[in-house]
Image 1 (cartoon, one colour):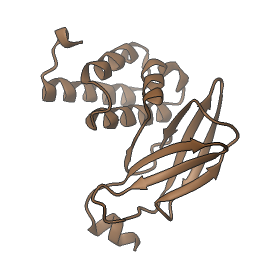
Image 2 (spheres, helix red, strand yellow):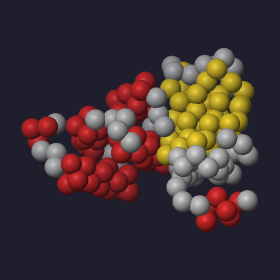
Image 3 (cartoon, one colour):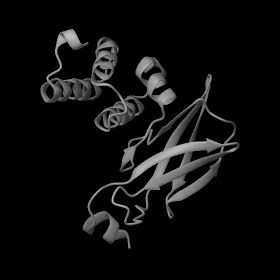
Image 4 (cartoon, helix red, strand yellow):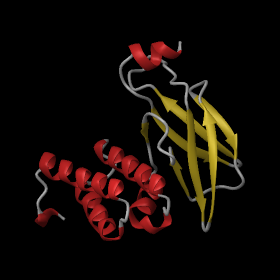
Length: 169
């Protein structure tokens, strides 16, 4: 079953994490509607004001629930970059991530956030000019060369692919 979904099937899961009361609900959606489940662990960062917690889920089914300490303002799945899929961010989380780079002091967390933002852009959840503007604001303070290079690559991909000009930003 593991090799069938990971090796022989095409596509990747669409994963989102929502909350309901004292539960975080991890959902995995098969874009081809074949009911595939990619068995993997996903770690999500839940942020409530100044408090954050990482909640882990190991997918065995398309939906898994985990207890949480309190409802979060923002949820960032795959915070450690170890999971595979398209991680859907809600609008509030997108806005928070794009406007608060200083919150993510760990370079792995920052890179995971950038990757998720870029994938959400690629899935038409973020306007290209908004994404580029946010990344341009992040660049001067980025100290990690790998994260810096990734941001430059994302900006270049969007500008070349979409023919975004300075007037658009």
